[in-house]
Image 1 (cartoon, rainbow, N blue to C red):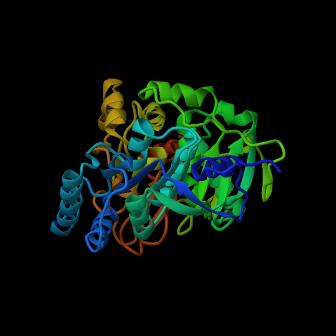
Image 2 (cartoon, rainbow, N blue to C red):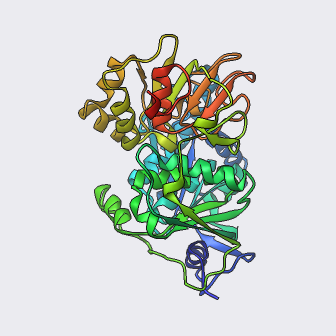
Length: 417
């Protein structure tokens, strides 16, 4: 039998001719990314080792992004621990550069790589044809010390994309629709592989949005076939060379195959308190008034989404009583948006533009919502208490719907304005 993209990358990393679902392989890791959410815990465990060592410091990338600027004395201590260790051990370290996955995509990730990240949305890297997966501190530490790890080869779900998205519909609507269809457990410990003619109609920003949310369906990783758009992105961001460009074999074996007509996707919203609680915006049972809107995160804080939001809000105003936070995903995105006048457009409309960081999606240092408040967000999750008080409510939607809702003061699509 042939191999899926996930199986080919694992086989390459393991140095074996083939890998099949259900096998366990020892693999060489290309990068290990960690952020300020848990790195201080990893450092603490490292310092307890009898014979501490770092296998290859060039493979480590540490990024402060969750609480930027620092929000408390406790957070300051954990970030200082991370900062001091990185400096003492020559580890690549970023602070204020942006959200970890966007920084990795801009500077490091290349097709064919196998990357561990101490963050669940490391699956984002599949947009570039890389096997990215989130791990806990113990697995991260093992990889950091040995440069290797073990991987259980996942089964793969194949998604054949056909046609193209209609005007006003985004890739985020597509992925939330898929999660709603297969459920939050529908891809547990599986790879979600995307391909087909419809893939070529999607921008790289679209592809990052799709792969980023794969973990919300329980997936181990997400992967996309490499094409001209992928190669153009690599050329625009430093000219990185692929490790390997894989497509699945014609006789690859899949757990299930889905055919998705992109033209049938409509603007959707994930209602509280589950990411798979999805329905078309037009089918919301009642009017949903909002207190806050958020445009940003590793899922939707790139230039494409900021441009879309700016087009919708230009010449309009944020609704009275609504807080609209706009947070570019990286310093590069921020500077590009600044140069294009996008940030001015948002501020003229009454939005609050923040520095690049996880912000409201993380629900810790910016835009935290209070009891009974409603947030419509381009963040990654809407679990109970995700963005603040345990009795608040988070709706997930696209950049277009979030911006339109900030103007209307209630959840609406852009064409309803």
